[in-house]
Length: 419
Image 1: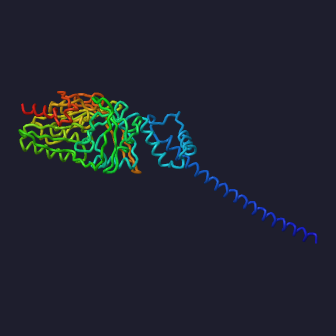
Image 2: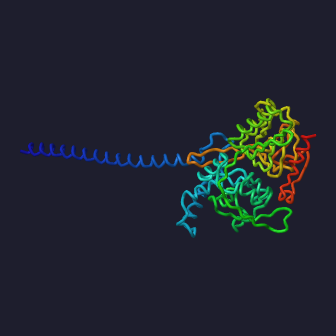
């Protein structure tokens, strides 16, 4: 009897031990599963942090481009959060507005008026400008000595018809001061639908007081090159800008001058704000095919020579180039190069002096960044950006002459070619 009881106890003990073992295994499994889940969560968070931090501190693989160790990117988010929490109009401020604004500020910190961040809307407007069609007043503007300045009113546009001139300092746009206003902000305020009015308050040397100029906006469609055949078979070719249609149009007119045995050619680059670098080099190919058109100098001191390619249609035809304060960028390249190669006499007034090179880089959301990457030097070493192009013969066009439609600069060019 005693043995049976002992056997039952042993069997019961084994059963209990077995279930206890199974229960302990179950607890271990739950703990392991829970730990695995936690580890996966931690792993995912860690991966996100690694990706985020990698985008900031691990972006650059070489030492030269590494972000400085004393840059704390948490400050960016501190400012972001503060603006969203405390600004009086925080309910009207969008994340996209803050984001694009911060990218704009990043580029503006370069203190370079020709480098800028353009959101998708501004990028579209920029592309329309280069295609030769947009709504506005038809004037190129820039920053000169910290003041918003008219570089060039385009030929036949509302800006020119209203009397806006190269060198005019724009002090107000519709009564709003332009002090500390960026170029793209000014462009946005000056542009507008066809038929609407914009008032520019300007200062001009020679005027006793500030002047309000009222301009009715219109659709601006400008062919970049025009041809007029003057007396004595002199060809007047005016290039308004170096746009997408310039190369084809200029080549056609240069060929006409060659086949028509032109006595001379006047290239009018006055109030030409510039445009595509490649186009200006193609234009030069009609005089200096196979020769150096310009030199591009980079920040590291390296230089690159650009060789003109063309048909030399104008190589043997006496040429005069007209420039003024509104001649900038690519138009200065053409004038400076022809001057250095002694292929044309330069007449008029000293050019604007914009000899820097901008690269436009498109961003995947439709935005773009236009950034200065180099500067231009003429074949004989003139620094366009600092000096501009000084004419071989200075002929000024006064306000009185302009209002009377007297063009002393063109008249002088004709005198030279008719001699």
